[in-house]
Length: 335
Image 1 (cartoon, rainbow, N blue to C red):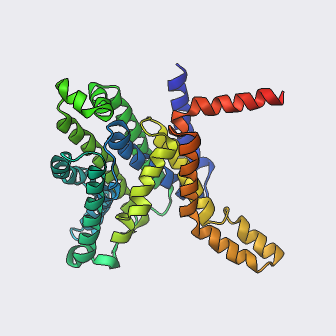
Image 2 (cartoon, rainbow, N blue to C red):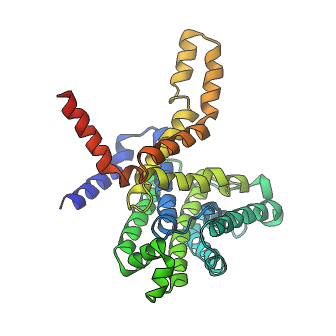
């Protein structure tokens, strides 16, 4: 009984959040968090639960983003049609890719997904007659307020978590985990490992693709460097999973909150605190420090991952009992 109550309470808080926090800046951060929940959930299904490391999440994200953008710029349709179509077309890309590359295992498959991402980035850059290349595509935003985008992102995030949860409690989930643990043993038991890896990849691609389409509608502008970015999309998806907890249902939710918060703290100089200190004290070197901190978010990601690997190898959610024991022990010692 406690688990459904906690889930419903968290959902209630997320539903009323835009009504309580009306600042556009914080609503923007929450939209990014919810997008990363969906992307991280998709990555976690194929990599965390099925054991097939995906370095090409940006390929599906970018394909969904360009689907929405091209529907608007080339066909004159609403970019919102890109949400279902972006997911479907991402699956259409994932299917032949998986059919060919799932013969590979381990690092070879991971490198193949990395190559897929780079292929799409170069195609989007070179094919200027379709994608406008590095000039990018501008899409008129539907809403002035951020609240509608927030609720769409919330719906996608909730659907992503529910779908992954239902899948992992079904027969499919047992097959996915068996493939992750020992693919040869799974095949010896009669499991069609290629079929179920394909199934996992297609679900993952769909969730990531619709999130890419939402990104186009929300941001209003895309180019190949943004939506097919290895670091900002593919690596970030991996970090969300690792920090939150690989192979856990709610790991991407926790990981998304942590990673977006860390990124924004460094990008904004402690949410503007360093700029405030510089203006108040008049110290000239504070501007240099602020610039260094703003550029150091990649370094902060690396340090965070090292800490997680050393002390929380299963992520925050996976090692939550360990974290809870640490706080309880500290409390007892204080008493």
